[in-house]
Image (cartoon, rainbow, N blue to C red; front, side):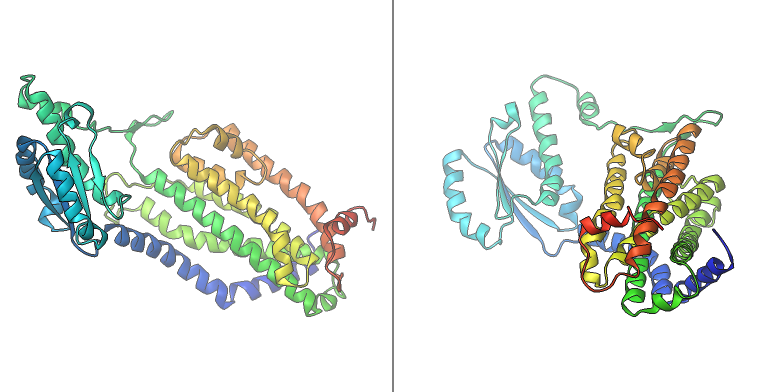
Length: 421
């Protein structure tokens, strides 16, 4: 299968891809882009464009006074992102106040009006009026002080000591410790979660990117008739193998470059990371990840190359590209569900299921201890998928690469599988 002609084709693919501007730019810019996106997102989420005036109306002067004392100590008051105006008045006066303030609400001179009736001491139900009532950032900031006052006022008449009341209102602070066989107990931070997301994202992006590049390359060679020149020296099977292996080696090399900073951060103390953000990754995990990714590239690049051989127009190829893309997108969505529950039954099955195991298993390994037998099963499933895909893809590629003119229907493509050579 691997002869000097295939090796020559692999070298050709490596020269074209490793030295291309697109490969160099994507290799360098993707990590910068990824961290830039996170930075921009964090900046946008923390950015308050202007001060928000909030009118807080209560039916109780006691609640108004306590709320004023607590809110004055809040960070959002001290940095002036929210300007609260606290009053107490009855329901009738509030209705008149609301009518007078309606224009200011519509013009957004007032961000919102919060009404706290006396019945809130029984059911904690308050009312919020605003042009943008779904502003969760504002509500989440002001919710805690109001809740503290209501709890304090509710229990004040029950003669509960202040110290006990403060303890009752405290949130539980959970320290998580990971138990692993043969290892010391250690506190678990967010490193595994971040690493899982990072690996999922890199696998997802790289599989789509390398697959699309190969598909475009096949379509271009077919439309430019370059493939006819190549097939005069090699067989279609050798051409396909050379193209897929070349792309797979390129993809693994690129992934190794992307993982290098993560390995450096995880294995050295050069970087001052928060205590709860520690990356725990071993050499065996990196080796498995690269081998697993290589198998994934063989599978998906083979499918993308097959789709490219069917069509001459990139726009027509979109119809055949979507089913392959879904085989990458669905496992990525499954890994996102693992962020909430790493033992998700769907994720456990997907980590050993054809196509899905490529993305799900590395993400799962980053978060939990995976039994060795599951890793072996996942690897065998991926290897068997490669051997199952190549004969089918090879038959379609062999016919499609030389087929020009009218776009074939899917029924015609299925008939190609029945051809004997």
